Length: 357
Image 1 (cartoon, rainbow, N blue to C red):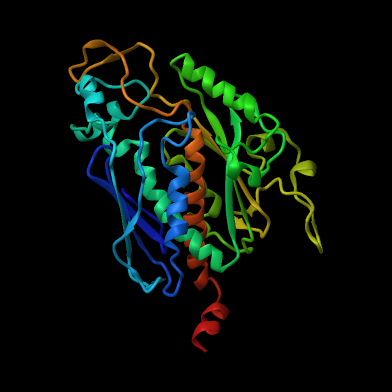
Image 2: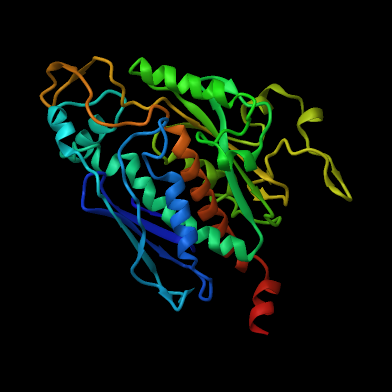
């Protein structure tokens, strides 16, 4: 499946070392101002090669809009966008043509389809997420009209956790750090892993503010269920928490319940979601990324004939995929919220009357 969403839907295409990647976004209401500079700025946040903490593959990730926009506004028809690959080094993967890279999707893709694009993982590469960021940028332009904001940052690197969540600071940090007091230590963890020819995992946090109460489609399309599904569908993500997440399992009801006053909720242990529906509070989600499987250490593997082999990596790879992954999480969250907003339009007859009467 290569499509996401019900009302706000996008389909991505392309491979890591193919000619191009892109997406088709459907369900965008007509009349939205399509700010191409903003879309490109979102692409620039995710693109590789900006700092020493990322893969040194140099891609401009220049986005081109092919359809669905006229005189700077959405027309209500599908918006197609494309970005061309410019810096592939497919020869770096010639030694893995018949090998399965440990920790990658090579083994599973081959056993599912009987064929795989070994050049950087093909469709299973995290490069595909560039198209998701393009779609997420369109979603953000919709949310801007409704004064809803989505922000992200890095909460944890290699086990070192933030004490504060400063989303404004994360926007200017090289590693999108939420806590400036431990940013350098987190950078050192990444550098040490890189110098050891290894990699390290991390945790991103996504915060949504301005969401109205009532978003989510019980029973089988709950807001938190769709958030978990979308985030777990990203490369290298191994766990997702809403609100207090795992810590809630260690608490008591008297402590975990978010009590309600005329001024609103006194706490936000729920992460802004109750019964699969938004309660109007901030939506807080943590996303856990495993260490990048592309490491420059000798490893055991097998080839397509199931013969034992020794594998040595070549190429350019992120020492911590969580960094740029946080931007993708933010983009996916934006798409989810827009989709839920559109789905919610038929939950009450009053909504229909407000349009048609």
